[in-house]
Length: 239
Image (cartoon, helix red, strand yellow):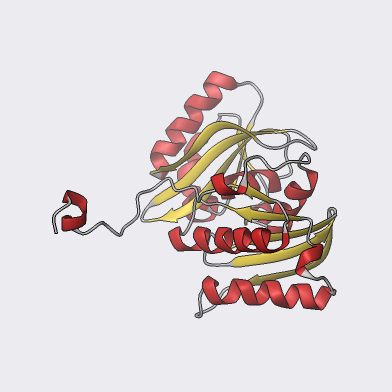
């Protein structure tokens, strides 16, 4: 099964081609041109390098956010365009699901991603070998100290199995999580923290035959309001 996986949710984006769960080619990128220019170009380059025609792609995996407001829209828009043009179904995953799956753990995994502005994105997922992540705490945006308190409370409610922590939010805010102390909450190895576009492709390959939702229902996952605001006259209906 030929898989195209795409992520542009954060400053570094990625594209991967997989045959089943085997990596055929990948490209990670970040640049001044921005993802809107880089992502389609890298997809074209990888397809040409691998000798694949876009029509041969059987599934498309894409991240939905949370992350950059524009970044999540870029990858999803390209995925929908390719799907409409060539017929491949689109499988959408949150960035937190992909990072949780990349931890390589079974049981409960909390994914913590740097959201800047002194905040983190976080969610908790139940992980089982060969299965999709099962949401246990919905994606949200947190002040790190408040998240620490929530994780301790969650573990006290759901113990005694450990809650594993992963994600680049630990690289930025790791000192806050030292307060977890004696609680059975355990960070995974730092090399597993970044979002891996290959993991996205493997999740797409393992999923059941049908996407989790139809293409028209796929939308970016935002857990924080956009900075841009509607002009006052549009918001009030005045002309």
